[in-house]
Image (cartoon, rainbow, N blue to C red; front, top):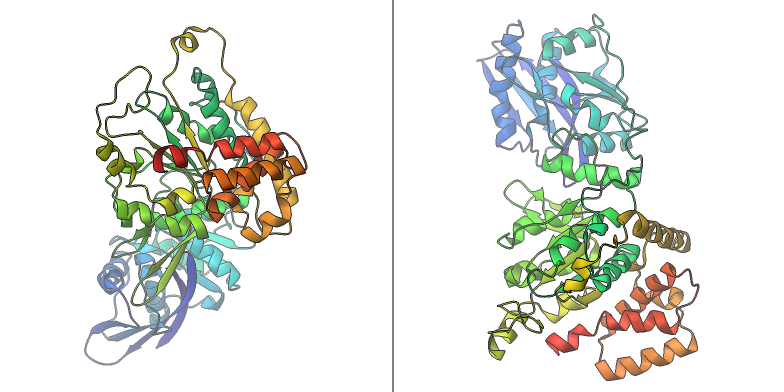
Length: 509
């Protein structure tokens, strides 16, 4: 007695079809699974056996062999339980009134036959659709995240008995489709709003430029100057997520098991790992590879507070994803890749005590301790941060004013307009913001007028900018020009952009 059913496994965010072949033959009662299964799949033998028994069926006392094809692909995850159980039941003749060829089965079994929620359901469904598998049986609790996908028939199932009756035509289940029309409605009522910040107009302007062009930003200033407060309000001025961006983020969160009650991520992520985080926590990996903080911040913000407090080797691993927009994790059996297009927002004190340059407090640090503290931030990492801005403590006069500061809603309008200009400009380039410009595209799109070109030339000689810093200045100047609605980059745009690189010489010169 032989059967074949389909399921799916993930490597990174890419799914691969697995054919579960089941053979039940005469011989001593054994239950073997072959085809590079991991521990979770080997353990599924007991879950499948007990679930079938507790669903009211006799488990065959025969020789049962399960082959997971292709045999050269490492299989991981408990989502294969359901396909193995259906393979056994089909070979037994219990499921006999259905063509299983066009159906894929995903789900983990509990011992009483219930089908439990799985991680990574969304990327599996998308991969199956791309491989022309349109009918997908999956756990009832995964129905919402997968029901947003078009051109697939989602069949949500609660338990094994329900599935058997459905496959035999004894029970009808409607294909599930999730209505998401209201999910991306604009909501301008943010809990954290820029209007909460008194003074600090320079910092707010730098964050506006950063948001408008998707530029990385470093904020330097003493304790209590509002660095963290301002950074946490950055998502309130970022453009709303598109459906495509939401799906990309949700795939990552689905694999990481972080969706919880949220079936689709509808807000830009804001991730703020503690400075004790390891390189693996930041980049991803582990025995069972999972996305790290840089991937969880995809299309959102990665906030690193107290940047020099992170281990230096942890900071250095950021360089590759900041440049490439993805993370590669190598294993013996496979190489996994996760997207990581994030905005880095970093904050730090200017010295160990925090008060170097503070007009109200005296710095107690020695010159050597300040140098040691700042040396934790390498030049290659600094070069990858487009905007460097300094902030000082808020003046009493600013705190005393009753004038309401500009709201996130108003700033966001300017950011949205600048982003629209960029999306239209780069519609044939495969990018959507100035922060993504390559060296080749910078020459094409960052045109300076004669006065701006002269200023840029003088600044390059005076500050001895690197080639990467030069390109960063042009990209930031392009964003400032977009905020002003200017087609070409003018003198004032270049001057402001150069100002955002002047701290290199002050602190790391």
